[in-house]
Length: 229
Length: 242
Image (cartoon, rainbow over all chains, first blue to last red; front, side):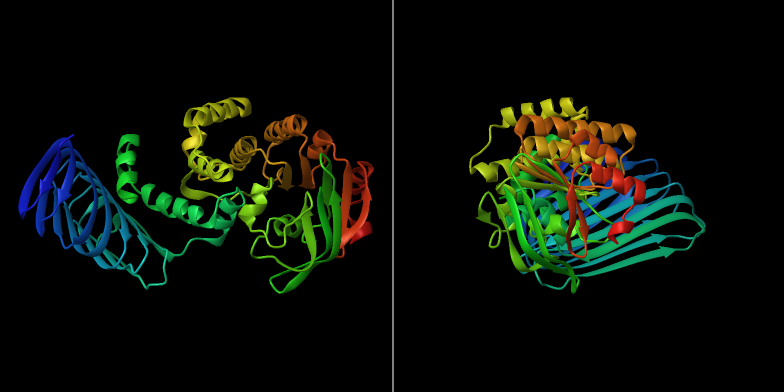
């Protein structure tokens, strides 16, 4: 499959297809219609991107984004009108300070919004992760999930700011936010099977972010290559 | 042989065991019984150096190797494996990946992936579990029975010489208990491994037929005997030992 490499600010119309994408610009708008799958697996120094995703009515988007990154200051805005569905799976390995701001605007009815962010902080990595889901008034039958998790492999301080703005009674909203280190009982379990501490930590942390992405075996191979580069 | 000599263990600032002694010769099955909270699981976890259990006195040796300065990983590689009553789930770590790394680190060599996969499939077939188990996260989203079968896969692949079964029967229905007990019996027959069993369930003991039964009381073993002790406990409970 060909990769779309976006080197300058642009607006892309994506319809009924699978896209591998690499974003190297500052501002990108993605207009989604039909059923679209986007995979973006990248290792890079910096990410200072503002992405706007507009979902047309009756569209479905599965977006798997993986960044192995030093610095990031990324903003993602998702706009949904009616009868659309988005599963946005975002996995991050942060080696230095970073900030991710996500905003999901739901203005119509019968939408599904599933935002799952999992990040590992290692080396000097830390994250400020702010996610706002805004379900506008006079809307019906929307299902919204916001799951934000950080696994710390260092002692740097990270922050999660989850916001749910709900102005309608006819909505199902769930959220989860956790920041933790590797659990002692998980480490003990793997050690008790004969696995060294460092290998166990690697298994647990890589499993944590890989499991967040909804990808095929073939895509998993590509991803593992980027994780271990 | 596993030898536990004069063991004192503290957990949560409380002394759980004091002057505890136990010898389990190669190939023997010993069962440990006692009321809840008496320290049975503490013995299991102390053998494997769970960091929440602090051994302040005494020594544990396995095949004449002291475990004093060994890590949990070292002890597992000496051949000791434990199954707990509620094996934890680890999201994102698959059984196959965990086993591949455990085997490759144990031997220090890359394992033959084709032989590895064939052996895993044979074990799934033997245990009557779907091969999809291998690519699922460890125990994640599994019922009590599925978790125990999952642990059986680990036993058959990693081939321990000493098995610690800490209330492995917990959460199993009649059929699942039969399957798990029979698999453990078959493993024992094929490998002549040793076992330390913690249980309240006579059915498991009737299948595995332990060589000795020990009753734990006041931080040490109060009585040792054979299967007649199981009948005694069934009829009278632990009132004579509490």
